[in-house]
Structure formats: structure tokens, C-alpha cells
Amino acid sequence: MESRLPDLTQWMGQMEHNHLARWDELPDLELYMDQVITYLDRQLTAFKQKEEKGITSSMINNYVKDGLVPRPKGKKYQKRHLADLLTVCTLKPVLPISDIALLLEQVPEEQRPTFHNDLCEMLDHCFSQLSGWMGESLQEEEEEDSDHLMHLALQLSVEAATRRVAAQRIFADLKEQKKKRKEETGKR
Image (cartoon, rainbow, N blue to C red; front, top):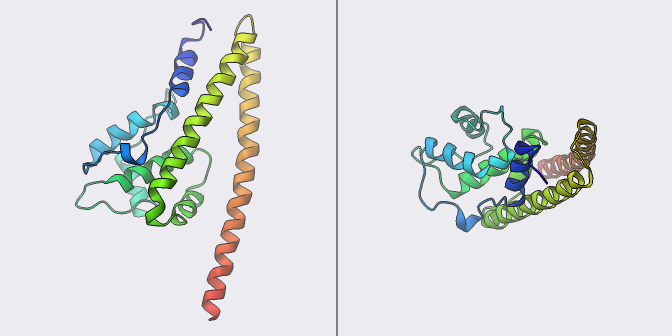
């Protein structure tokens, strides 16, 4: 594809080669807030829109305050913090924070590395597939006219909306199961 859409072409290249750090690739060193922000910004470049500010210390502090991410130890963040923050940042555009919290609380500590690696592999796979599909779709057109781009955006939006609805249904069922377990535990 020619560079008639340089920003889109560049972003598609980032998507195609996206690689979020797996558990063993996360820094072993404890990081301070400014280092965490820099690290997350680098990891999440494919997710960032041009006008977006990116993750901020206020966001991280709110996730900690809300119990979504564990408290740092002496103002230092570890692998677990980074993995949870990457999960929150990648899922918050499509899921309410309460659903992300439900998801994270379902993962036992010993399974955190596997959960994180699975999430990264899913994201990388989806980005690669999407980049290929978009590239093919744009190459099929003689020109990347606004009608064709609008149609692509609409198709992607509809797919996202329907998948989000399916995810919401699953989370509703999970919340109901959790509520029933709590009630059963309370009756004993």
C-alpha cells in the first residue's frame, strides 16, 4: 500500500509487529511511578490515539485506590503491578472497570503469569490478523477514498459492538454466579 494514508499505514505496521511483554519479559526491577508510566506508554503505543494523553499517575493511583491493582510496596511497582496495569489499559476501552476487576479477581496469584501471557498472545494475534485484513482491504481499492475508509470503520465498529455485547453477557453471568456463591456461603 502506498503512503497516501501515512498515519494509518504506520499504525498498521505497529499493529502487525505488536508485541506486548510476556511475564518473563517484564522488568525484574521495581519501578517508580514515572518509570511505570514510561514503560506502559511504550508497551501500549498501538492502543494510543493521536489526541490521547496516555496513562497518568492519577489513573494508576485510582486503580490502586479502587483495589483494581495492588498497592505498590514502598512506592515501587513490581511485575504483578505492570501486568495488571497492562490488562486494565488494554481492556478499559471496551469493558467497564467493574468487569475488569471481576476478571482480575478470578485469577489466582500462581496463575498470573499464564493469564498475562495468554492476554498478550491474544492481543498480538488479533493485532496481526487485523493489520493483515485491513491491508488487504485497502489494497483491493484503487484509491483509499473516504467512502471505503468509512465502510471499514463502520464494519470494525459493528464487530466491536457485537463482541462487546457478548462479553457483557458473559460478565453478567459471572456476576450472577458470584452472587449465588456468596448467598450460599452466607446461608451456611
